[in-house]
Structures are given as C-alpha cells and as structure tokens.
Image (cartoon, rainbow over all chains, first blue to last red):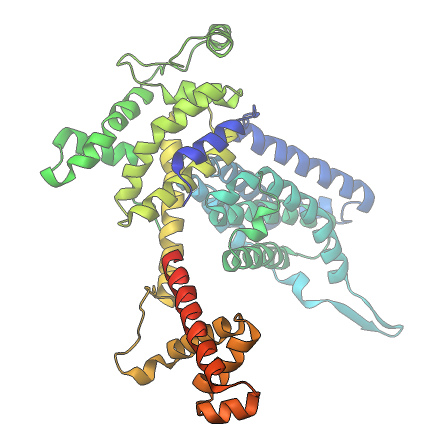
Amino acid sequence: MTRTSDVIDVLVADATPVRRLRLPATRAACWLLFATAVMLFVGIAHGVRADLALKLHQPAFVIGMVAAMATGILAALGAFIASVPGWSRRWLLLPIPASLVWVVTIGYGCLTNWVTIGPEGMSLGETSKCFATLVLVGMPLSLMMLTMLRHTARLSPRPVIMTGSLAVAAITAVALSVFHPLDATAMILLWNLGVAALYLSLSGRYGQRVLSWVAQR
Amino acid sequence: MRPCILPCKKVRPVAAKGYGPGKLFLRDNLSCAPQNLRMLRHPRPPSSLTRPEKEGRDSLTSGGHAEPVATRADGKLDWSIAMSRAQAGDQDAYRQLLQNITPYLRALAARHIQSADDIEDTVQDVLLTVHSVRNTYDPSRPFGPWLVAIANRRIVDGLRRRGRVGSHESPAGNELETFAASEANLQEEAADACLVREAIDQLPAGQRDAMRMLKLEEMSLQDAADASGMSVAALKVATHRAMKRLREMFQQRGSKS
C-alpha cells in the first residue's frame, strides 16, 4: 500500500497555481447570461410565435412563464451554490416553490402530435419542430452547465446535476413557450430530467467513469 | 444518505463536554479541530486581510525563507491562509497544510471505519480529492466545513464501495488445506509429482532413463538392463547418482523459498 506521506509528496510536486472559482452567484449569472444569448439567437433564427401578444394577456400563460423563469434562475443558483463544498446542500431546495407553481400550469400539447397524416401523406408534426428547438436550446445549456459543474464529479454529483437539469429544463420551457404555439413543458421536463437521470444512473452504475471525462485532473 | 458529521454542530459541543476515556485518541488527534473551526468562523478570520496586505505577506513567505507559512495566535498553522497560498502555487504551504490535516482526516475516518488499512485508504482518497478540487476553496470562507464536506463524501463513498464489495466477496486466507481428508487435497499431490518430473527431466540422459525405468515405471533391474542395453551395475550407479542429484536439487529449492 502506498504510504500517505508518499501521496503528499506526489501532490505537493503537482501543486501548480490554480484559478479560484468565482462566487457561485457570479457563475450562475454567467450561465443565465449564456442562456439568454442562446434564446436570443434561436429567437432571431426562428421568430416568436404569432399569437404571443394575445397569449401575454392570458394570466395562466404569464404565470406559467414567470414560474418557469423563476425556477430556471433559482435552480441554477441553487446548483452552483450547492456544488461548492462547505455550502449547505439545502440550497438545492431553492427552486422547489417556483417549480411547483410551474408544474401546475403544465400542458400536454406537445406530447401528442409527433406526425401529421394529412392528404399529402405523412409529414413531421409541430411536435417534431418543438423537439428540434428543445434540443437546440437545451443542448448548449446542458453542456455549459456540465462543464461549469465538473468539479462536483468527485464530490456528490447527483443532486447538483439534477438541479442543474431542472434549470436547463425551465429555461428551455420559457424559450419554447415564446417560440412555439404548442405547450411543450411536459416534453421538456421528460426530456431534460429523463436524460439527466439516465446519465446519472449510468454514472452510478459505472462508477465515476462517465462523469470523469469532464472532471478536471 | 446524509453525511453524518456536521463539524460546527458536533465538534464544538463534544469539545466542551469532553470524551470518555475510551476516546482519548480521538480527542488528541482532534485537539486542533474545534479551535480551528471556532477561529475560522470568527467574524473577521485572519485570512480576510485586504488585498495589498495579503499580497505583501504572500510574497514575503513564498519568496523568502520564513519557515512557518502562516500561524494563528496559538502557534498552529492557519489552514485557510495555507490553502490560499497553495492555490497560488506555494508548495511549502501546501505540504504543511496536507501534513497538518492528515491526522484530522484520520480521526474523522476512524469514527466510521474500523480497519486501519481502510482508514489510511480513505485519508489518501480525501487528500487526492482535496488536491483535485482545491480551486473550489474560497479563502473568505472557513476552511473546516469545506474540508469536512469533502472528507464526508469520500468516507461515505468508501463505506458504500466496501459494503458493495463485501456483499459479493469474502476474504480467502492462505489455507493450505481445504479439508483434512486426503481426497480433498489431490491437487497438491499432483503438483508435487509435477515438480519431481520436472527435476528428473533436468538430469543427464543416462540418469534420467534409469530413474524413469526403475522408479517411475517400476521395472526390475534385469528388465531395465535388457530394455536399455546398460549393465545392471551401470544402472545401479546411475540411479544412485540420480537420487543424490535430485536430493541436492530439492534441498536447494527448499532453502531458496
């Protein structure tokens, strides 16, 4: 067995200067800024939905959107704070009230219309476009979040990554409710949290290997 | 599973109450911890110097020869300052810090783990993790909770891993015999026979043939003499020499191992 003093020698020899992490709030703000930029670009490319002005007068739509946005912001904040060792894990509970409000306003529209079978044969339904936008917005956000939280790979990644995925899901939901006429929240939640859960169960099964590709050495 | 060590809530009352005689070891090793935590949770910890002041101090010690990196009022190493130096690449400070926290980590691990080997394993695991996430430490925050959060994580992971392994595996000692009955130990006899055959193969040709015919195939002297064309006397001499040589070979092997 290696002696502990030898381990210390090796670590000391490897002690290169490191850049400290910024404050969790700052990092959360950076991520949210990035999310805003992604949404902006997708919005420019895609255009907002036609009936947005009308929708903004419906209280249910506005409440759902505000709740989703609050969930996204608070979940990102919670994930970044709780990812630093020494801070309380209770920060992960931060997005729960907002996410409860959000879940209550969820509709199922987008889950039911994958393909349209019309007179001109089978074509991709609105759902498929929905899904494409979802992946387009969600993927960069997820990758960014994963990279920014990579240091938790050696700590306790699961709750933090799940909260991070909730943030991604919420932001994606906001984007989709602005861009698409169908309510896609159920699909977004299924997709984002499902992928995160799959990823984490794999990483649990195969040890740290799955997460360690982003982990710093 | 919740980590079960909460430094600020548990360590302090324990220090006030004192340990029973059976836990003296822990207290001795931990003696620095509660003070450390108390010190670090002070509203103005020693590390909260203004930036120019701090840089001045940094350059003084990292470039110069001042031996103790950063000490507190009671003469012990200030972990928070040592870590902030280590983040800047100061190897002396880093070594002192790691050596200083090792007994504390050992005591933390000893609360949950019995085997001394496993404790040492866990301590090394914690040190490696501290190294890989040392950029997450913020010197404006107390060092104790940061370290304990990491240590708890590794301790819990270790317990889970050992639990998982332990549920599937059982340690096998160096038992020479599985059962006393000789039928159960045929394998060893086969191994012995194999060794003898290998040794015979190394003998010179005449001796090897004599051994094979007379000892392994158990032919009579006369039959062996007819089969090989050697005289009976020559066969006797060859067998005698072969036995002597084999005895030497096995004695050498025995003294080697």
